[in-house]
Image (tube, rainbow, N blue to C red; front, side, top):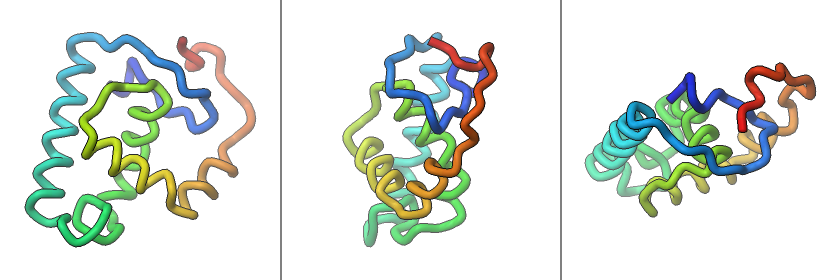
Length: 107
């Protein structure tokens, strides 16, 4: 997934077709999210309920799923929306570097 969908905070949301390998990565990630939420996250919007280091670690993944318009389950989308609503996310996005590297500005 990292090779096909590079991290890009400033990218406009546009769908990108996934390879079978990237689709498998997304399925594994969604399964991990589901397991964490079902086992530990019932009390809040994040993987373990309250925001934690696990959510910070998965923030780049949430960004990739969002900006490349990857089809995800409703529960994954709700988690992504909760992440993107955080003031820290908004600050992170606002402070993203303005320059680009052409080869990473994928369709």
